Image 1 (cartoon, rainbow, N blue to C red):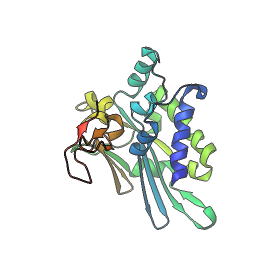
Image 2: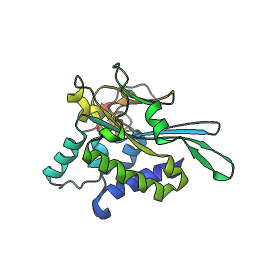
Image 3: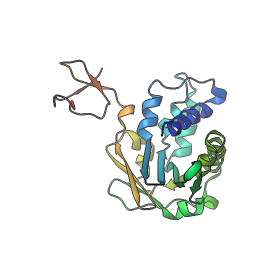
Image 4: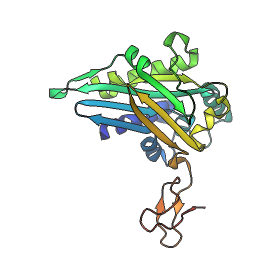
Length: 224
């Protein structure tokens, strides 16, 4: 589903103020890392994680510290996911599950912790609600009926792990979303946020979360 990846790339551009800000060099790799999809018969499920690093990728290297702090503060203690669960019919028809159904059937799990239910729309903090309200029409405009299926869902991280919430993407562990019974997991840290892994004998480079060469089995070292 390359068209979905293109939509996420467009979302990155839209988040960059008027398209004037340069994307991080690894933005495409980051999109690939953050995107989880499952297709079985006519059903398509999608979960796309939006950690602070996603928004940082839209900022130039010289972005004001206050801008970066605003993003970190807004998402501190929260995990934001874009989710979709839809039936793809003949002639391109799409029947998405309603937002209410998605909120009822989606759960988040950090490491081996307990499952976390989404926060109801009425309980969302103002700035997060504004962000979610901005994302929805972007996808509708870019993807039409498929964009209607995409819903931003926010999870409040429990206090016992809240200190880790803004560092999840670069921490050791696992983040799992259960979408109507389908589990989608991110192995952490995300490889796109680490220095490339290098085979010092061949010079081959691999994603930063690789520990061994998939071809030779040799240990890899972070590229300096």
